[in-house]
Image (tube, rainbow, N blue to C red; front, side):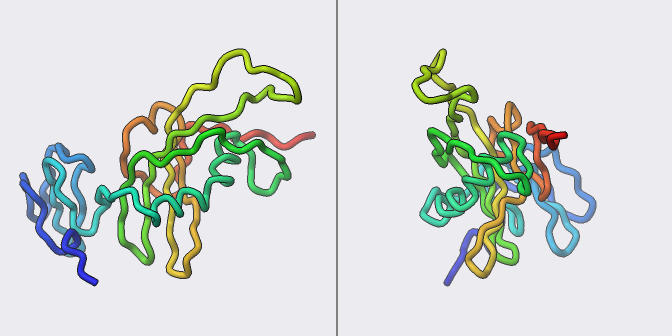
Length: 179
């Protein structure tokens, strides 16, 4: 299998070399290469060894769907070890994504979601129609075919697709345990 975007030099490099600090004009701000050099790109060129824009294909949608229930729990701030029955997102649409080849693949996926009203009960009508919002999901596609939610961004920080580190959970408040 040939991956030209992983071996091609970046388009329009504006700074390369040891210790170079570019202006971060590229969409991802550049990347640190294995030899210790930093490359900052301008425009939409790939960053070798960095996260790159990827098409929304079946593998990206599968990664998002695999962590959908956990993303819903995190969205509500409920720890994984607490039993809770949650209504699923009313809408969950993959909008755009980045991918980074590591031991497996890390996807940063922007999804548009509509959460069900929090006061929903049988026969109730919501006061107003729910508003869609964006989430950024960091999903590790492991080599064994399993997917792990490694991070999530909620709120205004999720409006623009961007790379973020593992174990980053922004915009969520973890609910306390009862009593």
